[in-house]
Length: 482
Image: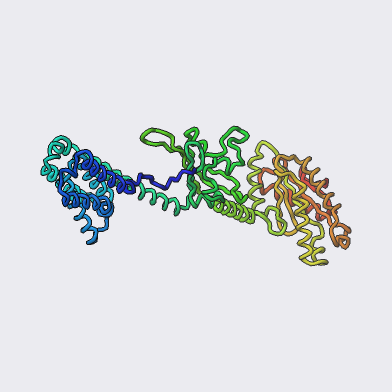
């Protein structure tokens, strides 16, 4: 049976008091009747009043000490008090003090105001003592046991009152705690000392995609980790289970799992073991969860947007290669890094591109530029920097590459572009779309970025002014076609 952590259980003494009250009254009557030969001693009219008083106490007293205080209740209270006085003056049974004690106990259970209780209890006690001293049969019993009985009565009632107040406070705290659990946006889970889930607040139900009644009595790792208590590395799959069994406290741990609807969730978790302060006994463990799935998705979108904006700042929109600004920044950086190595630079220009634009228009010319960007991006290493230099010109930074290797790479690119079919290229003078490439290298040709660009650019235009469709480099004071 599931444990109800919200219910403060207490014994309902009120329910049993009328039966105990009736039993005591009948016991007193039987004692007087059979043990003390009551009938033979008293007159008939007194016996009649005695029986009437007994019936009043049995029937009416359970209703007299209720917290409602209308006129009828006060009349009943007076009748019961008179009946108790008459029984005390008439009875031969010392057990009468138990009947008074029971009325005090009943009074304590009904009343919330302790001062009112003290007034009523004092009245009953004084009445008991006075009537018992008047009744010569009971006088010795009062001296022997009466004061002790009164002391025990007040002590019991005081303890009972404190217990009532404690239970009241516990019920209030339970209600406050339940309201807090119901209104917080954090998911809260409690597992008992055996590891079974016992409390799952509404926020946790949303996170897990399961209702509390579905999870009650089930191990946490059975619910959310495919029935595996440990992963392939021998680590706990459930942090709250680990906290329970090892005492490990987890703070701000990010975990992911698949909820009851098959949806992937990311959450921030804190877990800790719960002890009973008095006995140092382990009560269970609490897990506090905050669903950060939307936050993580937003962070991912913001990061993607940041990368996209950063990429737009360094990327040529048409060809999706790096732009001229980024090229200049990287060239300076790479030359500085290549102080004890080599670096080559290619500047590539499309031959007769202006004529192609004149024949087919700028939209078709843009298609050629985009295709050129794809060819160049696919033809170099990931460490190489391919950029659009401007117009129909492109440039490639080749870190760590000497001139001879760079000339070989440039020639391979020239041939690849020439052999790539381009729509409408047959109307160009060579009948094919070709490129001319200028090559320069540091430190053999130049010492800095400006010199390197100038030499590669001059080599390019030497080729453009000669045959085109050629690779040209600067060497020993002159420009040589490769």
